[in-house]
Image 1 (cartoon, each protein chain N blue to C red):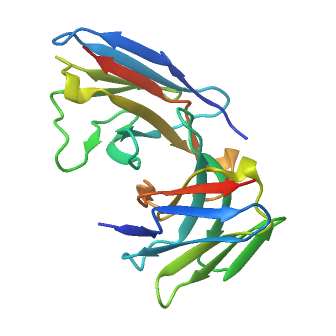
Image 2: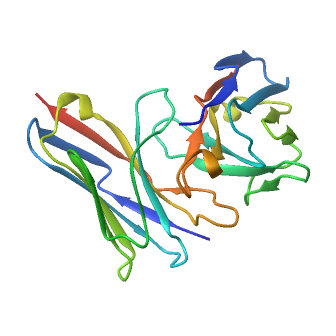
Amino acid sequence: GAVVSQHPSWVICKSGTSVKIECRSLDFQATTMFWYRQFPKQSLMLMATSNEGSKATYEQGVEKDKFLINHASLTLSTLTVTSAHPEDSSFYICSAPAGLAGGEGEQFFGPGTRLTVL
Amino acid sequence: GENVEQHPSTLSVQEGDSAVIKCTYSDSASNYFPWYKQELGKRPQLIIDIRSNVGEKKDQRIAVTLNKTAKHFSLHITETQPEDSAVYFCAASKDTGRRALTFGSGTRLQVQP
């Protein structure tokens, strides 16, 4: 199957700083990528849809000015958590629809980024 | 939007027994239903999926059934092994348009040796 990478795999930052997380499709192009957030012992919740060449679409309750998304190319989407606070500590996972790289509807997930805000 | 409910939240079985996890969805337009296994700190791993034109799908010890009329689908694991212990998530999406997955709340499966 196709491969999606994320960087960094984990990050610790001080409250008030910004953190950028990269999501890359390594062997296929992705015009759309999804960003999910998973708090401990909870499910994955969709935060936003990243669209190459246009603005991201945010889910209700997700602050677009706090979680900046840039889909810079057909293989890269970035999520920047601005002015991070301890409540933003979570596991952030991106995914990309398989398209021609997989079955219809199938998505490929990145390995996730563990963010800890002190 | 779509809402997916999953039961039970925890499930403990003896090795060799079967395990069944059930999900219901709300959006009748959803047509893709994957099941994921997630180990602590790892990405969700697709274990089986089913599309709305099929009622049942099996892959060795794992099977999924789909009832479109009732809008529910189930995961069946037979001959469970300790390595099956993990958190399992069901999800639903449309395979056209936005295609984002809506996940169930998860089931923690523990297989006792």
